Amino acid sequence: MKMTKMFTVIFVAFCFAGLLNAKDIKFVFGGAATPPPEGYVKVSGKLLYDQTTGYGWIKLAAYDCGPFDTAKSEQTKTSCECKPETKEAPFRVDLPNGVYQVKVYIGHVMPTEGRKVCLAVNGKVLVAPPGAGGWGSLATPIVPAVVTEGKMELLFFAAEGGRIAVFAAEITEVKDKVLSNKLQQQFEDAPDYQANTNAAK
Figure 1: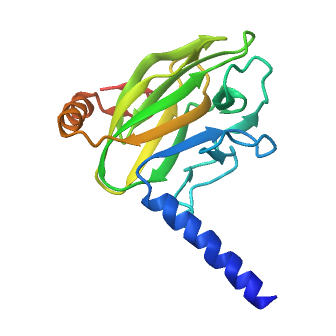
Figure 2 (figure 1 turned 135 degrees about the vertical axis):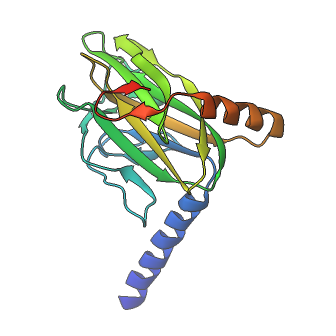
């Protein structure tokens, strides 16, 4: 029994270590009852960031929704959403330093639900107000991201009158040097996120 428990702990630690060292990672958000697509990591709205796992919400801001009958892809069957009074939902993942592209699935797949979502990555506003998405409209913007301190913070935020809904996030390391330099410049040129005002400065 003790050997079995020890093996389980070692195996889980090995899996987490592999995730922390990964340069490409895909998250799908929502309740654990709906399994994630192959190659994706499922994230519940109750999963707080932990150094061991290397990813999670920085604060409990979201709740799980779905599955949705109107979903057109495996990535959009479930979501993490916020109440109207919640204007920021920060998510962190530990990654090696480098240049990345981040594709997020935001907005909503339900025609009766309206969500316009903005995004800041490591303090830079990449999807600016009024945000992407809308009533029954899912948006999948791809933005540049630069990691310099071993972590990437995806700050989903709502502009005035908006609400947050996040379905998935796909993070890919950029290996091409020319493209990497171009994306790094785009990231650095993006406006800084200004806390409390949900705007750029």
